View 1 (tube, rainbow, N blue to C red):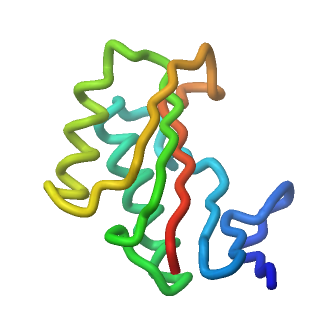
View 2 (view 1 turned 120 degrees about the vertical axis):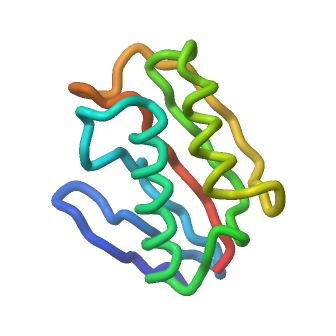
View 3 (view 1 turned 60 degrees about the vertical axis):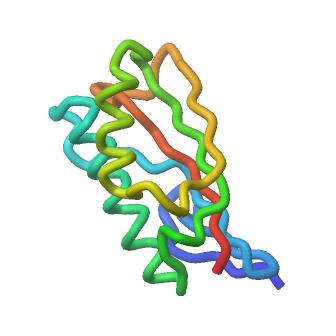
Length: 114
């Protein structure tokens, strides 16, 4: 069975299939902030979406991070490790991209167990 959650005009934020939650790309609400702050905002949004769908950050399976400036990877990782701590880290890939939209420094896509 496929369930779709959190509809937007162009997609659902979360699609569930066989107990796995697939998240669409998530960006920060306040894009005037720097990389660390945008990353922290995104992770907070992910945490809320996980909770709304019966999961939590310890059940994240994989994450793909799209970053417009790889020289800011350390700032991104500061927010990442502060949110996760040393345990329960998902598999992760970080990709440098040319652009994500006005003032968008990072976009994150995750997959989680329910």
